[in-house]
Length: 411
Image 1: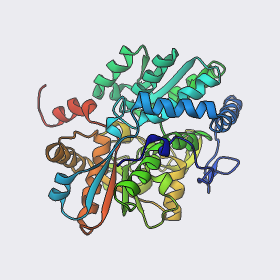
Image 2 (image 1 turned 90 degrees about the vertical axis):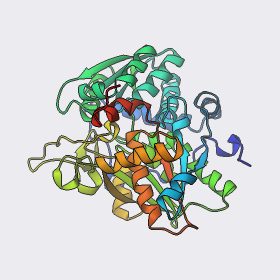
Image 3 (image 1 turned 180 degrees about the horizontal axis):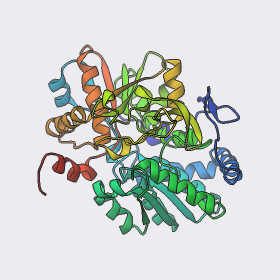
């Protein structure tokens, strides 16, 4: 029998890992921003710390996660995939079943409620795959807020269904034609907007990156995934999983699953980055696998740059993983050895995309397919009495056109 939602509330663990007073996880994180944004970030931190301890706010958050998002999402035994792979039992945390089709809604509900409590009536967001943009447009429509979403021109082309979804809900989608015309550049433009309109605007950042307090705040709002998964594992299986697997772009999806398990040191945690056309090709987005330490978008972390210190153009078949940085907590988890990070290339991700679709009738997002690909590899190395839990972070409706184009199919 599944645990009731009341046992898996959004309430945050006061003993959870938090950054220090200056927003650092070890040497990573911090606030590397213009003076204009410092008061806004301080205001945001004060509001966040206040409202996560406010019973009325948390009750509203729990209610919205249950009745609007549809939580808790189930853990599903992928029996056919397990048989096809061989080895350990493969379980899927079904974030694809959330309203809007991905984990992004968990974070946007929390941030939108916070914006509303702070009296902000205009929200902005950046998006790559479009799921965060859709989630931001969704919560803004519900709360009667103006919403502007910045999206790279290339991502607009490859994620056109999500662009239309945003517009249907009243959001303004701004095409970003500078730089690589992808997520990095969308985030740059969103930051510029925020600097210009800081008094009236709340920036709903889409991942556990950026300046403090965003990395910890976004993680906390999405950690409902891991809290549910931990409780569900103990309730349904009587044990914790042997390994957790999740794809990593900026990092909110993986941290949402990993965070409640950080002190369970027997549970292996693996983040899967986009190796694109191969780590040796430089056409990839595998920051933790092949990057070095620097400052990007207001935070010290691992990033991909050239010998002149300029941020490199990145590449991935999945728009949501096409980012040259990563959240600072992931950088810290890598350095202390608590989490492992690996790369999966386009071909491997596409194979996993089709394998899950054909064995289980579940079409994953291309981002998620990277995690599925490595989860299959890992399961094959393990025994049948062990368990691999993969965060199925989003569904693949948005990627159908991309997959068809890559395979020469006209829809």
